[in-house]
Image (cartoon, rainbow, N blue to C red):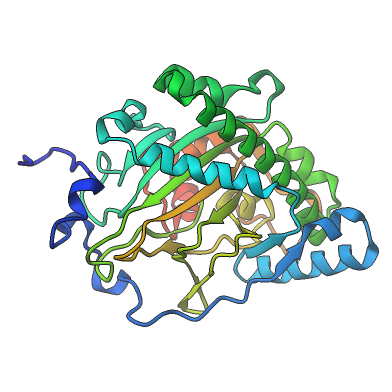
Length: 359
């Protein structure tokens, strides 16, 4: 029995066998999943290897495609990305390894209130309605050379020796994602006209977040959402989906899907980079839907600058025709705002700017 005021415990091993989902997971009618499969979003595949080769035609083509996508909705695919498929597969196996554990085992890593790392089952400690049908495991990554084993240490100390391999694989995967992110930042710098070094150097020594998402089968998927509509508050998201699919993006006043592609990463602009680009590149509303047959799994690397880094656009992107859109802020302050004061949604950055003006 659940008493009033107590957090709801999301235990998929029990919930998915009940005939109806609890009311906390039922979303309002205007936010429920589409009754018909949505159209596929036209997201350009960017040949990152071609761009990095320096071939003038490949560089020009990649910069043009990414510029068009980021001005419109901020989503694109990266192919020929240089990340070993075997490493991606090992990281996906890690999702099964962790989320198949009993609830009491997973709760050893339980996320503390106000924190952004740890195990969370539907954010049930912070919200009582519109809960997402998912479990997540988030952990900090740092590109600082003094913290090169931060993930391995986190899991060994928190979960014990059985998690040594799990921690090692995730450390290696995040190193690869950090490297990939910096290469994408070269491309974004070229497409915005500030050169390949500016954003790459801004994010060297990044203090980022890695998240494993697990969406169990849901017996009433037409009533629930795996992740509600939101824009990512971080700078850049690099997502690898499994074969199940479920990612949807809101473009031109309707939802579109981005089908899985095992050879590609889905990349999208976050609120912090939208501010860094002075609003030229867009952070777009997206969500995840669930189904009644298969669990869905995804790996999300959220690139973020060092905590105390001032987020301010380069001077080339500010002029009389394009005045400043956002005040200076640190990533640490925006992260704290989303964890303690505001649930990330479609207006996170605007709400944050208003909050900054008041505090």
